[in-house]
Image (cartoon, rainbow, N blue to C red; front, side):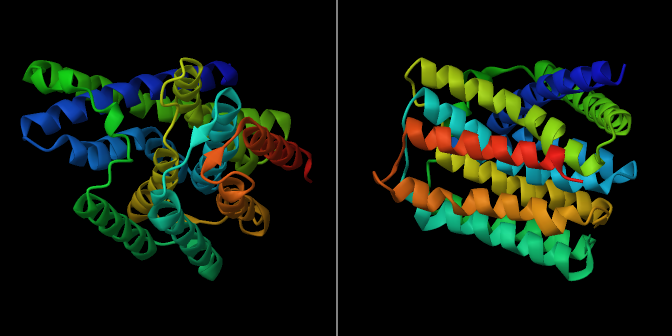
Length: 314
């Protein structure tokens, strides 16, 4: 029965996320917000909603390890699984903004998160607020510079002519689906963890993290197979930044997140930092600004090793 709850939870999160993105973009058009700003802010927040609801639900229901490792695992999966598999389907070109802005900011947020957690074994409301304010400053800098590498292709012009009734209906469907999806996913995952004898931290790193990355993975692989612009590396980096600053930031403002599993600080977060850091040598060696099929295979292989190690550790 717990597996059924997990499947239903994933399904509702996908549905809820889609309806929230549509309604948010349509509402933004109503207020005459530019397409670029919608892509950088509204879409990014809306696509982080499933992770936010899962982490918040986990924290409020007494499972902080799931709340933290949902984000840590999602950030690892975005690079090892989503980027790796997509590159194996077709070579990905990398924009120069990757190493000039996006990657350094992602590394700073990742290291700051480690410091906040290591400092006193809790992500406090103040620290969450600092992360969220820093994200706002980053978004402001992006918008001011007019960067165009952050999900703008996902903003559908047809949403500019949607009726108010449809927007309200989509918002209601999205909110309800995300609420129940997150609740069922967290509860089902906790039951699975208890039944197979692994920690909630492992479930957060694997089952929940992969589940929240599946929609992005599917869309990226389909686009790559059609030889379209498969995926923007900037989008994945942006997603990782949002996961740390908005998901954990907002969750900790509502309820501080304690570190209850020592492996999070002694092992898991270093995997996240490692996958983030290794992008630089991968992108510059041997062929600059390209992620080839071989590099994609390396990322997926490394992700496989990570999965094997977390399930076999004591």
